[in-house]
Length: 144
Image 1 (cartoon, rainbow, N blue to C red):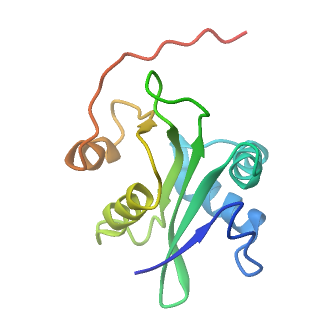
Image 2: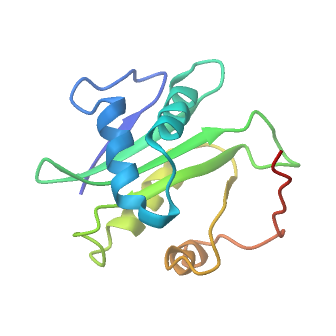
């Protein structure tokens, strides 16, 4: 698999636009996803030099097979410096190791610790644990 790293330092990619990334994630995240508009906000955050993050696009034979987006939190130590916001593998390509390769590239291409949120029944949870992620806290939210 080949990787493209997109961030504020590398600049936007003319062949893999924000819309292509957002639509890919919307389609392949399935029940774990968000609306396209929310995904586009995440992309804008990653591409903003004052905020930051990175988008890792995995490609096989010129076709996108997976995408991950990490956003910087602007914090250090008490909260991980990065949060994995999205990762998705083309649903027709799952089970081929693309998710693991994509996650490893995302881990290797960023500095600092990484947090992520995963539903307890999400099959990707096992992959995250194999890569060294642990469950430190139970997340609670107040939605207003």
